[in-house]
Amino acid sequence: MNSEKTALITGANKGIGYEAARQLGSLGFTILLGSRNEQSGREAVAKLANEGIEARLTLLDVTNQATIGSAAHQIKQEFGSLDVLINNAGISLGGATPPSQFPLNDLRETYETNFFGLVAVTQALLPLLQKSPSGRIVNLSSGLGSLTYNSDPEHEHAQFNLLAYNSSKAAVNMLTVTLAKEFKGSPLKINAADPGFTATDLNGFTGPGSVQQAAAVVVHLATLSDDGPTGGFFAANGEVPW
Image (cartoon, rainbow, N blue to C red; front, side):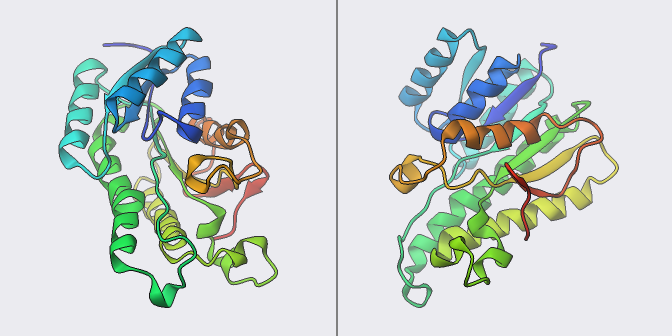
């Protein structure tokens, strides 16, 4: 069994996921780079290797249970445990369509990736995370999933009235809270990260924040000490209101 710490990151072939892989890899983690596209995944692994980072491609589509099971089996056979799971993969569909007119197909597809896929991956990897002396789960959420922000007409997030994306992230927050309660008293720490409005292809690179800044929030939660928080929602400047 490999004694190095391991981190699986979904959707890690680009954007915040890739940068989180780069930052964790620079700390000595072995990166299991989750990607549903083999070619882009291999290219990302090669880029990390050029920086001296130990990274391995893990073919993983969070909406495909067979690939989830295969990834879990691969990690179990090769490492026996998993130290960090970063649920990063996500999509945003439907644009600014008003909630009253939002296509149900787009709503369902958003939830399949952003919520149900996240739950499926987490459930499959939990047995391996429990074998780690300091397992960490980081769920990529968003300030747009904050009910407090959305219900405040003066808050900058209130203008983005996105039914599918916002509600799927609110669901991720509830999963974070309920899982943290289930594993309270164990070494597992489970938190949600608000990376901020980051320039990625999810928003056409319109966000003012950098992937480096966003990934730093994720990496902080992935490397919490044993006395760190669990069941919380955190951004770069501290805790985010639900």
